[in-house]
Picture 1 (spheres, rainbow, N blue to C red):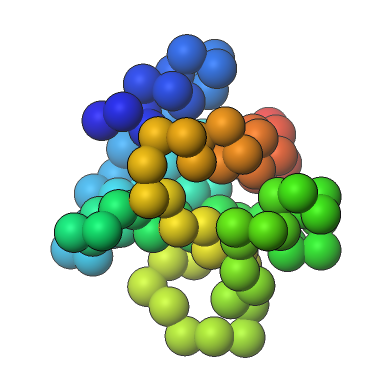
Picture 2 (picture 1 turned 180 degrees about the vertical axis):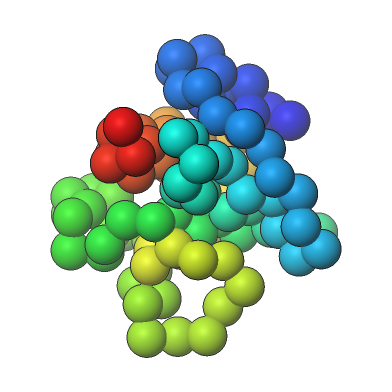
Length: 100
């Protein structure tokens, strides 16, 4: 819920689409983020190429374009606590902007 509040505070308008394995966030009928809750935090897949990230954003991200995973995105970001949201929101905004 906290991530959703941060996204809405940054003027991102989306629809939540829960599935069995993750919650997808859609904008203009395009899925741009998938969130999987884990006991240690959140695993977030973002539909943006890993090469589109800045060096700072790449530090906590992982390229999963050639790896099997539940989400649809090419970039994976693991959230351990709310301090990770600042970087994550920036990455999500890039993916969101691609859907407009």
